[in-house]
Image (tube, rainbow, N blue to C red; front, side, top):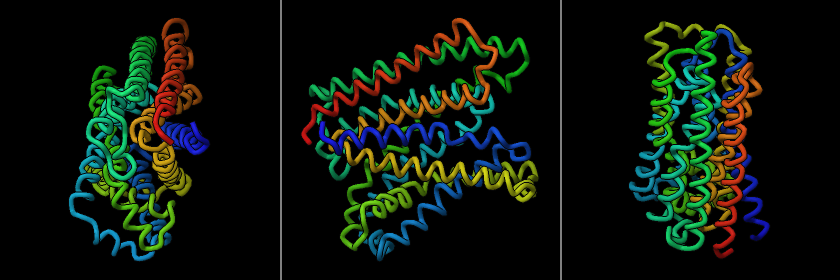
Length: 346
């Protein structure tokens, strides 16, 4: 494994931790409800920052977009829309079953599709050369996914155990079973974030770099245009909630909480930049391995936030031990997938 691939692993791992723990400001809010911080965070993270940076760093950006086949942007935005649905459901699951458990189930369910699909239906740019599923590298990566899914099962079992304790103490918010079902559906759709980049980055980056943009600007250009579908869903849904609840005024009731909500968006922007860059640095198999490692570390980030914020306070015995075992398996899964990536050509 060459130094660039090692850096790629570090970047996607950091991306997962940043995205997995990105909702930490929510824990500090008292006035803002889910619709307020979701609207502000997604507006900042998916629209304002990506488009501002793209227009600043990419000369003739709109000309570059205009030169692309319509299918390029459509394909990326269909995946992004799926991720947008997942993100909305994820925000509901945070309240129902907690940040740690939501992060584990959601990312675990999405990892199978997100890792395997780019090895079956090749991505754009350098991801077109990804090895097949049946290759030694592909089999190794799938072994890593299998280890990760065992960790997800342990996480779910730990969550059921935790829920049983919290129900006795009346600390849960809503049905755990309903929250679990939403997390599973969201998990299947959550792979859209990575796949939006995988299937659109080649043409968009080529269009931007040919017009004088650097790698960072071109990467932001992929996310800015490719996540439009997801951005619309993530902004429209909280707007509808605020209208239904007649709570628009809450957005301007607390400057500190508005700033905290914006930080959620900044965390998202940083995470997706690290993710896209790391996937590219990993090489041809970066679409699969990069997404897999990012998801494993995202789960770790979510678990870390869950523990720090007190979601597991007072929970001992088998549920906590199962969660610890799941964390070990997630780390092991990342190592196995990294070994699979080392089997590809530099």
